Amino acid sequence: AKPNLAHLSIPRIADAGWNVSVVTQNIDDLHERAGSSSVIHLHGSLMDVKCFGCHRPAELSPDQLAVPPAGQMIEPPRCTRCNGRLRPGVVWFRENLPEGAWRSAARLVEACDLLISVGTSGVVMPAAGIPDMALAAGATVIHVNLEDVGMDGADEIMLIGPAGVVLPALLQAAGIAAFSPPDDST
Image 1: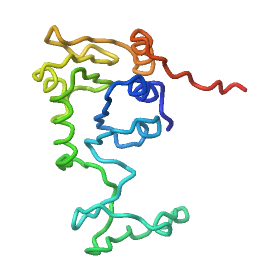
Image 2 (image 1 turned 120 degrees about the horizontal axis):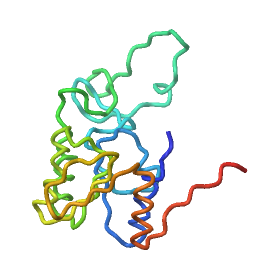
Image 3 (image 1 turned 90 degrees about the horizontal axis):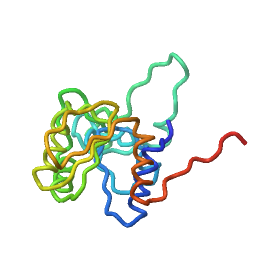
Image 4 (image 1 turned 90 degrees about the vertical axis):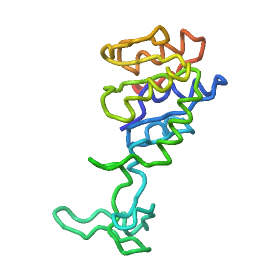
């Protein structure tokens, strides 16, 4: 996967002088590859590794990253601290969010002037409560989604459409130079 126009639009806002942070439930690194530097992954990241046993972050050696031949079963890599099996550093079903990530996200949201909520179903808690946290702290919330998320307040704006279309248009309306994708036809 490659960053889309929505991902690429976010660092443009920061380039225009705004203080921008990204709080995402996505576990990929598309925001970072698009150029965003302050990204909080509420559900962890596939780029990280942690131990099943001691739950500490771990690093894989190059030989542990080798792909086995098709059909060959291999044992998962082991933690150098406790010998537990290593796993992706993401939140799995019924696991808690990383506490540090949630605290950092809550601090940012409670201090923001504007929250742009992009492409969320608005049902996965506690992240679904982030727009309400921002509103309670006095921020304006812009929802960008394919369907109406059911706004309640005067400080909410609903922009319906694909994020890759809506965010570049929002930048243009704000007088911020939007990202132009390279012409792949040559």
